[in-house]
Amino acid sequence: MTPQGAKTAEQQQRRTLLIVLVLNFFLFVALGISGWIADSSALIANAVDNLSDTAVYGISWLAVGRSAKMKRGTARASGIVLVIFAVVVLVDALRRPFFGPEPVGVTMMAMAALAAAINLGCLFLLKPLKTEDVNLRAAQTFSLNDFFSNGGILVAGALVWWTGSWIPDVAVGLVVAGIALVGAREILRDAKDEGATSNG
Image (tube, rainbow, N blue to C red; front, side):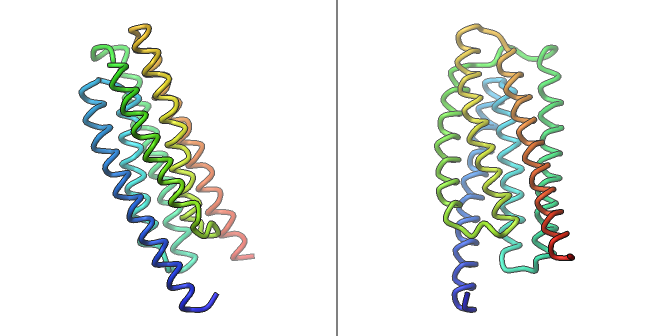
């Protein structure tokens, strides 16, 4: 690729990552407020997930055009942020049987549908970008994980609405945390493998 072509690609990556960053921050605010009002562990988990995504997209935005070593470092930071997020979600899910009223299923379904639509849009924005970059692969992993998590919350909201039980909400919150841990492992392994390849 010519220097001019590389510069254009980097500008496109920065622009796309910034758009995805803003969308995820919007979701963090919307899901956080609705999760607090609806007292939903799954929505709170999704909100914290989107906050971690926002931080990671910001790190990835800063890494565009930087050295391969810095990109691997930012990818590792992304994986660590996901691990921290998973721990926060687990703590919130564990307190559910002892504190708080039943979650509101209708709110869960409405917010999950909105978040799924936005995350699907993020995937379409990220898909055309160059995927050899470890940070862009991490960004795609995050958006795909979020989309699947939204589907789980939609199902949980329907079950909460139908049964009046908090169990589906907590169960999906735990699944969201599990998905985050799997994504973190993939990102950290990807960064490690790329580092081994470049040093080999």
